[in-house]
Image 1 (cartoon, rainbow, N blue to C red):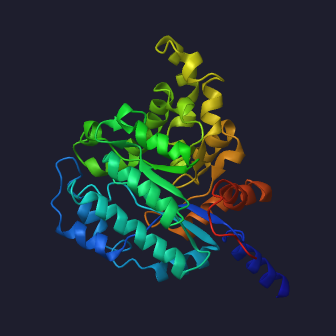
Image 2: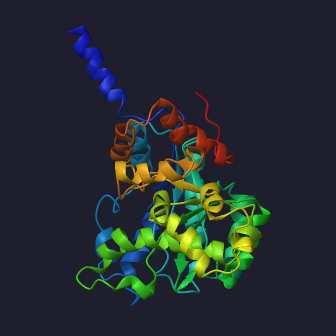
Image 3: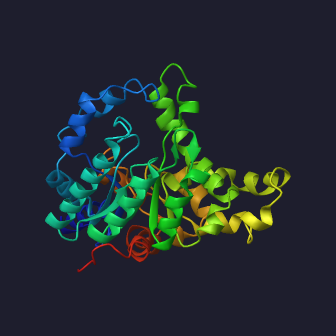
Length: 345
């Protein structure tokens, strides 16, 4: 009987994260934002069922208290808050800066109310450059933000676009950690007519992550703004599968490889950081770990799109080993995200 009980306890322990673990990809849904969504018209560039998707649990009725309970259940000590795809896209340009500020202030208050439990990737009111520069300063100087959160693209401009250089320069000056969340650009949103939202979320998001990484490289931004520490969602999307193609075939199309990737494309891809959100599956993790050093991988869930507990269980079930589990769940994010509240056992 005792052996059976011990085995059951061990099995239960294996579904929980290690003490000090960090979820680096964790969304939040304040009520004022949900109310604004409910009242906003749907843009022609957004998915027709976008509001329908988010106007129900677990998004509707979200609370910080419930979030903390779910983190405790999964054994996660700290979650870094960020806004999901399209969160601010319904706001008109004149209201966008205030919406971003209100969301960041709300998340910072969560961090104060629950000491040690939350960090923040402060959202920028992109593509408003001047307001984004103000928000970077406010985030670092007033909110003690962990880093900055941006999307892979805005309209049909990716992060390497010249319009965004002032923002990258400001982030580079602060040696900022920048978390990049994917979205589907208008040019491809409706390629699949039967269910545009599903096609965007399931297919275009992983492709847009690879697009913006390559755009940052071929624009020279990765070299010019070397002090930005990048985290790309979902193990880089399709990047691990395309890396060899981009490296070898890319030489036929890009004549300035020595300038944009002086140490080679493999080096550029491998020095970036990647989170495991919606990627804690054997094919994803195998492709990632075969190409990306484990030192560059941080744990993430994409809550509430995927549950915290399910993601932790999926990750641990891969049986990568105690050492890798500890590095990805705890050591890497706490080393990279140096502005997180300290972990005290």
